[in-house]
Length: 152
Image (cartoon, rainbow, N blue to C red):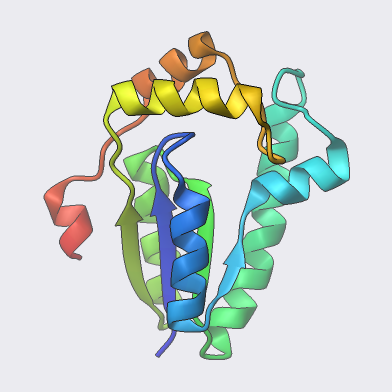
């Protein structure tokens, strides 16, 4: 049975690095919106269209993910999944497809996230550059997974 893996965490938590490890471990398809968005639209983080473009890319990713899961292949979605409601929605979608579901929560102390943010600004590697103020806002929005979410 295929499994839908969600990478959960804030920017600079190195979700993509962990996702690449899981991709090899599970022989899974890894889908991540950042690289796709940059290739299609450039750095749109600070534009009014950011949310719209991000949603469009995530919708396309799910179209492919659902087909792949139906074929019995694991899929890893690396999109942060900051909100519990969003994680629950994907859990439900996986169940409807007959797939298992797993959250991989990358829990990094806030101080460490800010250190990584500064390093990232000095040596960008295709990531979107975000400011400290943006990171502050993201931290305020983020809902940590509960122990129950991580067990299920």
